[in-house]
Length: 566
Image 1 (tube, rainbow, N blue to C red):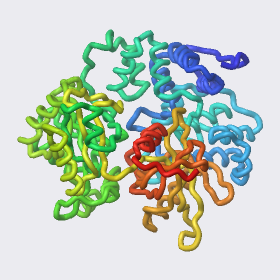
Image 2: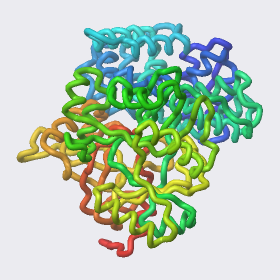
Image 3: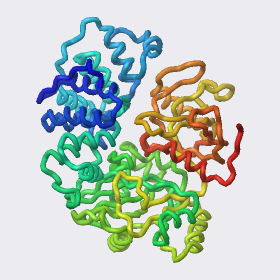
Image 4: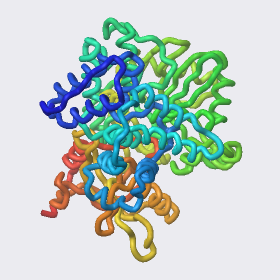
């Protein structure tokens, strides 16, 4: 940490002190020092402020699952800040001077002249953000922005900098979720293994801190209590072939159809059904037919299921993923959409039954339990095979591809369910080669695409929090309507523009198919996708869930033929 930075710690901390800690983190290179700095600050706060500060520090305004209700874009934050200082017309100059979005907001807020005293507390900021998220109904957008304006009017320039960063989830000070877990261990004295296990269940650093400081788990080996909130889904690593899956997992595996749908987590408790998306946002009102099916088949039972929802036509045949996205997060005209865009649920795992967590049971036992509960209730399970040998497994894979499935999932029979972890117990084997990449910039089109952002710069996650490495571009795969929609989406995330290229915040994830990966001096990472095209927009994934640069390297290394263009 810069020795010139002085931080005053108090039991009830001002938001200014939080901002100063974040500034200090941005000037600290050592991971250990960052964890100690953040941990000491969190340990000094009362539990309510510490819970909020832990979230804020990694760029989360509210608990996981509640953030979507804020519905405030970076463009809105900038406009409110610029209106406060009568600087709307100076945006281009300010962004040219700024290092990042938060820096631009700090610069514009300093144009007020005399700065207000730092009177905001962390608790007040959280209450105001919750109030913004709670606004619904007529003129909701105007009322949300009015509340945001009240907050910014009271904020110092440095506080405004970090308010903006929190709202757009882009802190850029190196405090990743992994470092935060180390900070929580430092703050509470809990072993890091215990912190990680609690995080698997809670999925939110503020809640993890509350559990640990509230005398939650004494030892990481002890069972955790049942949860009433969504758990992060277990993730899978890619494998190129079924043979590779056998080599990586061993022969004791099951294969399941990989569906082209949206991951959902389904909770039943006290006669109430709740449905959560992959990103842990509640989508229950959007899927009433799923609620009805579960209510009829499992009345009175407590459960947490992991499954997939797919869109189907009137005859029940699977249709494009994009049709499914018409249903998600919709709360109006649901009955009409229910008729026009029906959906079907497939289950593939169980996490809890009648109040007891079963994630530590081996997969073979969890699936047997799922069958025992789901089949009598008329619930459909994903197609599955436990192959006796590689030949049988490859036959199941080819049958799945011929039936129109994306591919198969391979799961080790003794694997535990590990929320939020991309464990080695699950592998995904797709027919087409695809990566989930983030759009970091786009070029203005010409000819028929004039007025649209239509050539997208695609990037993979690096090992540094919030940083991405470009691996290619594409203008293929979208319809005209999708080009228009993508243009609006990217302009709302605009950072700056130079020479016909609009640089955007890395928030939009797209699934990209490609023929192969070649060497390329054009990109810093040294690789580029050939014949890339967008398959779909991954509404269900955030940038932190995009494919990593390491996955791109592995895909390159696994190619039989490696084109070399010099």
